[in-house]
Length: 282
Image 1 (cartoon, rainbow, N blue to C red):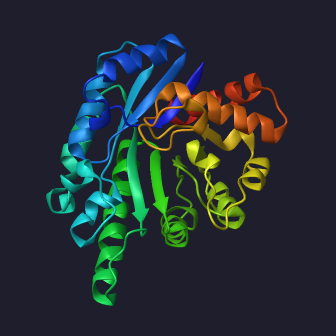
Image 2: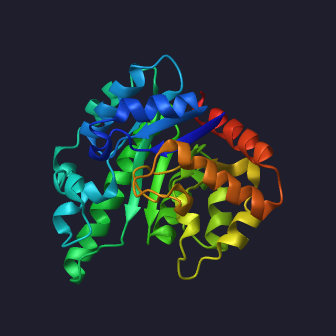
Image 3: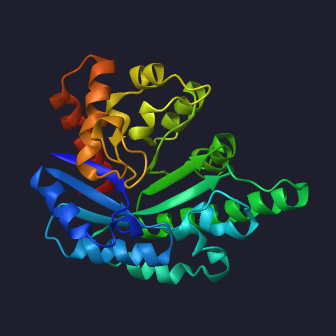
């Protein structure tokens, strides 16, 4: 069995065939956690999860791109554009109500994203402050609900680490969660691991990123702290030979990790699945 710990079959890309994709995945022994990026996609994630007796779970959170979409000039797809300025409508109780579902296993996708940032200093300061405020509110929510977090971070690792250290590590409070789609360097990886977090690896490991040596990252990352994910419909491994990613393609991520670590596919699949079951209590 494999667990795709971060996918979006609740997104528009799967609007017409989400159930077929889920059934195909389950038939191949792939379980999944559908991640909400705002209330609407969180509701859809819960609806999908509750249709299946096992193997399909949900997470809900307000993604940083939705929090500050009104300050961004580009970088938003059609689904994200429809969710601009959601922070103004954010209601913790709406999200807590979704968390009443027995299939809800995490709060996320939450975090920081400075990739498409405004150019003016005034807007940039507002941009970062609003994202950080939204993150802290949702970290508190996860703590209240005793749920782990799925953390998104792009071009903001130092700020995220600082916030997490201030809020959890220094205070001695336990933090459970995963850095989804990890793209940090070795030093940042160590800091996340010291905070007790898991590293989410997906098809991005097949893409060159300046300053990131994937061979070194994967070789040094402890296997018992790695989670497998796809981020479907995004970040499709090249071996899949199609543009839309799916949970079944998580196997290619396992193959690559096994090759770099000189381990068998079966061992990597077994340990990363155990990691997922431990973190998300599934």
